[in-house]
Amino acid sequence: MDLGLRDKVGLVAASSMGLGFAVAEELAAEGAKLIMCARGEDALIKASDSIAEKAGVEVLAVAGDLSNKDGIDRIVAKAIEKFGRVDILITNTGGPPSGTFDTITANDWEAAVRGLLYSVVEMTRLVLPGMKKRGWGRILNVTSIAAKQPVDNLMLSNSLRAAVTGFAKTLATEVAPFGITVNNILPGYTATERVEDLAKALAEKEGIESSAIRARWESEIPMQRLGRPEELAALAAFLVSERAGYITGSSIAADGGWIRSLF
Image 1: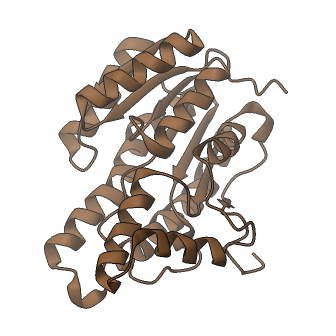
Image 2 (image 1 turned 60 degrees about the vertical axis):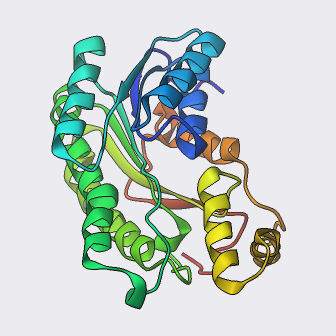
């Protein structure tokens, strides 16, 4: 299936590893040009070089912090300088610390708001005018199953992923006449560094092995296993493609059936 992504320009946030890297790799395989960004420059350059060599596409790596305006401005400016436009924006940030309401500080809340919500709003603000002018664009936010069915001990993620969902749904209606779609993709428990760190944190809290936490999660998933990053990446590539031009304002999970709600 030709997704119509060849020579499109995609900006993929937090793409040096994990889900972001898998999404960037999938877009590159479809022939898209990439801007990859992350805070750690060494890991980012290694990841971008790997994708460029494997897929034979142009890849720009820009290190920066998406939780502050200067970092966001610099990343988008470099993208425009290199490619002249951004056709596809995939927002993605590392998950905030786990914890309950009683254990989370005011500083934790502020940092999570900037990382999870502010970064999405500001990146969108910078790329949207060009998308409107060209009459085509794709915005896809990588959120979490926590946006739809809250996860115990993830107070920050549960709250702010839902905020991103509300933002995206509202924006989708506003920009639909311009040929722009806005969607969210909800990863379930997936074999990434983030999920391993979460398992270790929960294991330490409960005084058990992290393997027991992973087994518990797997028992709650109808498919009885964690997801693979490339499975989510395939869905992401479709949602930002020409083929998905009539899908907007949606939140679609890749969770092995973990979410139990009907809608």
